[in-house]
Length: 468
Image 1 (cartoon, rainbow, N blue to C red):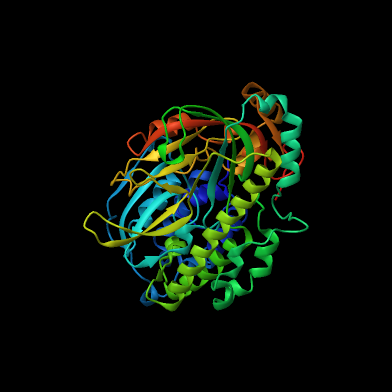
Image 2 (cartoon, rainbow, N blue to C red):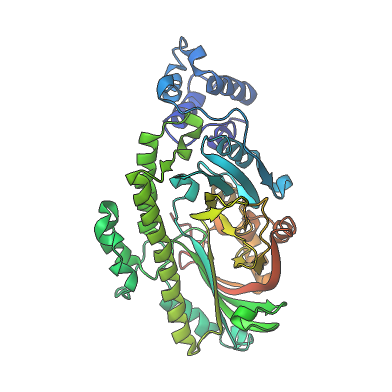
C-alpha cells in the first residue's frame, strides 16, 4: 500500500507546491520504499527540511518547504486553550489543524465542534477567536454559507399526496452549480456601496446578479420535509406540532469564492507563516486590506442570505401560502463579539454556527437523516458555538470509490426520501451519525424540534450523477 495525498495531508503537508512535489517523489525516487519508510522520511523532511539539502532527489521539496527565516512569523510554543467536543469521532488531521491554529500569535481561544473534519487552514468545524485580525481561510471560501428554513401551516400529508407537484416546484424554481435563471430577480443588495467602492467587488457585480437566487454544487440543497416542533418557539409563535417546511443550504456563490481567494493571497503576501500554517495568514483589521475584506465578507454574507430569501419566495408562490416562520443561521463567517471580560474578539466559525444563549439555529443531518432546530445555551468554552451539521465521515473521493448506488437507493427508500440529483459523494453514509453529533453537544444547544427531508434537490438532475 502506497501513500496518498490524504496521507500526506494528515502528516502535515498542505495543498500547494510542496505537496505536489512530495507526491511526484512517491512515484519516482521514493517508490522503492515501503509506505512506512516513505512516511517516516517525509515527516523528517517536514520537520527539518534544511537537513536534507544535500540530497539531490529531495532538494526540490526542501526548497519548496524553506522560507527565509527572517521573513517568517513564528508560532507560539504552546496552544491557547481550546475545547474539543466529540473527540472520538474527529480525525487526526482536523485535530492537528486546530493545534496549529491555536498557536498563532493572534489566537485567543478555540473550540472544535463534533462534526469537525480536515479542511484548509482552520478545520471545518473549527472556531477560533483572535485579537483584531481576520483570517480569510479561517472564514472559508464559501463566505456566509447558511441554512434557511420556512415553515408552513400545511398538512404534511401533502408530501405524499402532491409529491409530483412539489417535485416540479423544485425543478422549476431552483438552480444549482453553474446554472442560472434566464431572468434573475433583482434585489436591493446590488445598491450597496461596496459594489462601487471596493475594486474587486465592483468586478463581481454582474456575475453576482446572474447568480442571485441560485445554489452551489456539492452539499448544497433545497428540500421539502416535515418539521416536528417539540418545544414552543414563542418568538415565531410556533407551538408543538407538525409543519410542512422548506429547507435550503447554500452560500455566496462566485462572489464569496472570489473575495476569499483575492484576500487570502494578500494575507499570504503580507503575513508569512511557516509553510505548514500558511493558509492561516491573517489581515490586521486596522490595515486597509483588513477593513476592505471585512466589508466584502459582510456583503457576501448578506448576498448569501438574499439568495436564500429569493429561493423561499419562489417556493411560497408555488405553494400559494405565506410561511408562518423563517429560521436562518450561517457559518463560514467572522463576527465581532465580546469575551467574558468585555474585550472585543474576532470569532471565526468555519463550518460552525453561533450558539449564544437564546439564539435559534438549524443543524442538518444528510439527505436522508433528520436535522434539528436548536436554541443556543451560550457555552463559554465553545465560544458560543455549535456544529453546522453532521460533518463528513469520509472524503468525497473515498465516498465515490466505496459507496454503491444500490446501497444509497435502499437507504433513501427506507427513509421515504426522493432525491433529485446529487453525486455519491453526498450519500448519507459519507456523513457522521447526526445523533452522535447532537449527543456530543448537549451542553451547547437545546433541541426544539426536528426536520426530516422528504423531497431533496441537489446539483444535477440525474440520480447520483457525478458533477464537478
